[in-house]
Length: 217
Image: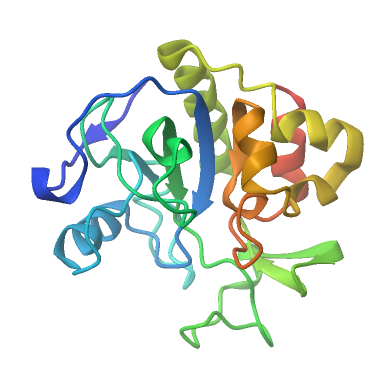
């Protein structure tokens, strides 16, 4: 697995190794550069918040794809940081997280920052998700790298990534990304997304190509 180490200071993650039993998918709701995302976590005042990996993307302006599909590790293997917003739980301590650089939902064609993605980076869902139909598209390179990463983590940490969200996608399609509950996810070790444990989150969203990826695991 090809990835780059760009570690935060040790004060910004929990340097106790734990057994990993879940994998959570997120997106950043921000820009395309994974290094800037990690640097932002390292310099903010929120404490030990972050995910072990960040996956770079394309600039929404269509003028920079150097980070597209670039995978960066934010802290050493086995450690953890807070990334779910569910309290001090085993889901935090015993999970791996990845953030995909992506702005998420669009309103009148624009991101929360007011920037408007080029048309090739906009996806219209068949049905609205969390109240939004138009989204910033996960790129082909991101999805290719994401599948490689998921299978790498499955092997590295002995997580059955066919369990959890992929099972629900096979049963329910896009609605598998809806809220399940912390209890339900805790009881089902495997692969999930942030939306499954928090009603207020929109990361990740059910882009058709992502649904296909999950079914193919």
